[in-house]
Length: 250
Image (cartoon, rainbow, N blue to C red; front, side, top):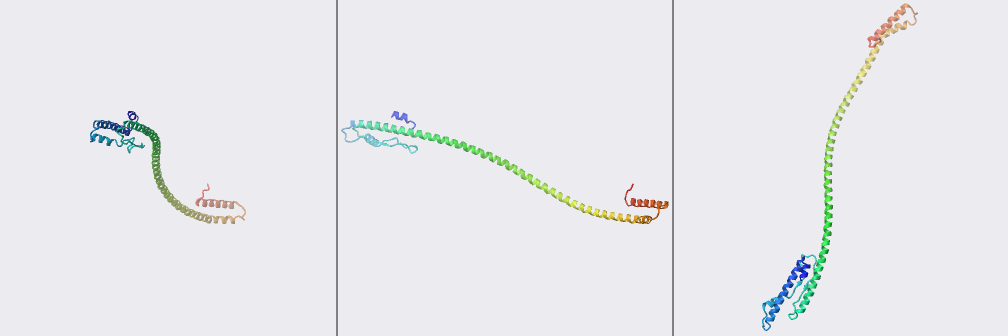
């Protein structure tokens, strides 16, 4: 039992069961001594009755509900008082089973520990992945926030540009209207000037026409000093008329 306790000290159930077996052995020894002292007495002592009741069933290697791996239960019936050798052999077999059960529990515990370590490692890996994913999400959220700020600023610029375009379109419309008005005025002035020019030409023509008639009449007259003088005077008169009409000859 000392070896079992040392080997399975990590399991509380082993310690409890070995303690029960030690108590049962002490009660059994006490009951045997009482029986030897009172062989002729017809009344059985209370201590013997209690020891017999306590020795009815001993459960060894019974895992409590909280243990992961159940161990086999071993039930010990009350031994015959006159066969202590059989009881010792039975207890030895019981301890052997308890040792095997302890080995099984230790093996199962080792397997569970390996599984727990593997699950812990997998959990850490998944947590690292989750941390990386959360970091990526945070970075993307920062990028989205920055892009939204830029988009908001761009939308503000677009509104300002639209207002500027509208203002310039209004100015262009005013300039177009002004140009159209000036074109109309130019056309009117052009027509007036053309008309004035025509009228001026007609006035000049009417003034020169008299001189032209005299010139035509003198075409058939032989040239003489008087005719040459008259022609010179006519030319001077024509040039004077043209200068008065706005033509600059000199």
